[in-house]
Length: 108
Image (cartoon, rainbow, N blue to C red; front, side, top):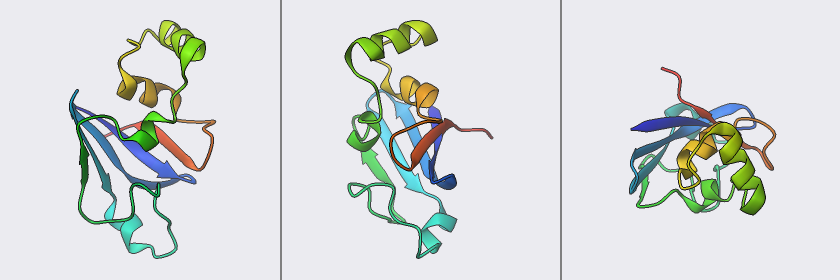
């Protein structure tokens, strides 16, 4: 199991979990849910106290990844399997993303 913390404009918004290669969970933080001024991370993941589950990496997060030659170069440089979307997301979406959302490996 791997976990990543999801931030929106630098504020912790939730946790993204890869329980196994075919089970992903996104859960909003209680504090983020309680803030009425804080928008949803994505239109496809509206604010909810119930966790979201999927058999594949949520499209919103998958679309934060590079494609084609850039993806191949990143994977080769970072030594990440090109089929490991969650690993690539944690390695590349922690800064300089397009938009307000960043994803960082979970630190306990």
